[in-house]
Image (cartoon, rainbow, N blue to C red; front, side, top):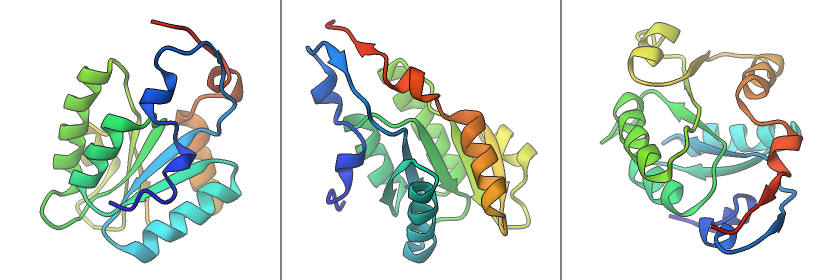
Length: 157
C-alpha cells in the first residue's frame, strides 16, 4: 500500500489522548482496482473540497480503515480477489471494532450493480457510471459530515 497521500486522513493514533479542534477536510477512501478511475475520483473529490485516498484492493482498504479516520468509502463493484459487495461486508465488521458507521457508496457501470443490489450488499448508496459532477457532489453532500461536525473538539478518552 502506498501511503504517500495518507496525510489527507488523520491517523487514528493522532486523535487518541489529545484535546483540540482538528480542521480537516472530510476524507474519502476510494477502493478501485483501476488506477485511472481511482485517480479520476481523487481529482474530482479534491476539486469539490474533499480529501481522497486511493487503494486498489479490499485488503488495502481494510488496512487503511484500521489506522486512519475515514468519513466515506467509494467502492467499485467489480474487483479481482474480493469484490465490492464482499469488501463491504468486511468493512462492516471493522466498523464494529471502530464503533462508527462509515457510509459506503457503490460505484459501477456493471449491469448487475444497482441501488437495490448495493443495499442488499450492505452499502448505503449507489452511483451509476457514467455520472455527472453534480451527481457525485449530491451523493457526497448527502453522506459526508458538515464542516461543523468535522471541526468539533476531540476529547481525551
